[in-house]
Length: 248
Image (cartoon, rainbow, N blue to C red; front, side, top):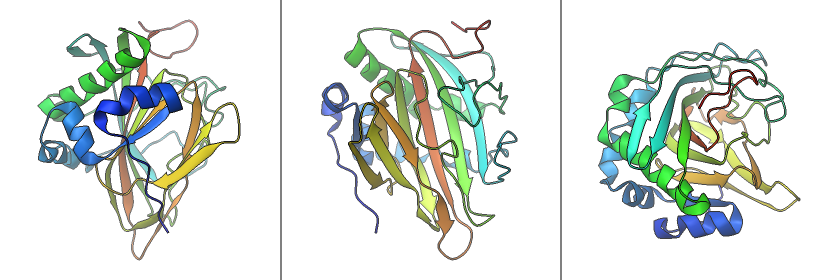
């Protein structure tokens, strides 16, 4: 049985992040936060239908497709930056850490969409409300996890932190699958919550220093299905990169 997430009203998101280190926003709340109609978010979903395979999976799987892009948000300005590798320390990603992973870029049509710009700007503003005004370095990851091989792993690295300031996980679409339970735990102890993101454009936002998170594998209900997400990470101290190549 799928567990419904505890929901926070959009105006309460900064306080919830300060108090609990995590919060879930319903689709209509996310649209309110971005300042658009819900159908404006729906217009972004087709951009998940053309994601190339992830060629870096070290578990030998073929269940993940993705694109990647980087942005800097300074006040109201959202600026795309030159294509760069996605890199994480081994301390945060035991499976893929220490590896420069070059993914295909996000479609320019998605980046140019007003709802996309509004989403990135609104979440960066939320980060600044919690931590004070910052110049935010944002990595955007489009994921499709499918069950072509019988099982798909949204987080093959297991329960983890990302090594950033804030993480936003947004469900874009889900169909023909079971499983995919989201689990969020206090980084300093055993307390945590579990729920399933089931409705498109539901968002989980996390204070990455305070919690660890994972999503359990998905399996097909009948025929092969998939689960699409958008993951946005926000870091004030430049983009993550190898020690000799810290982006700013």
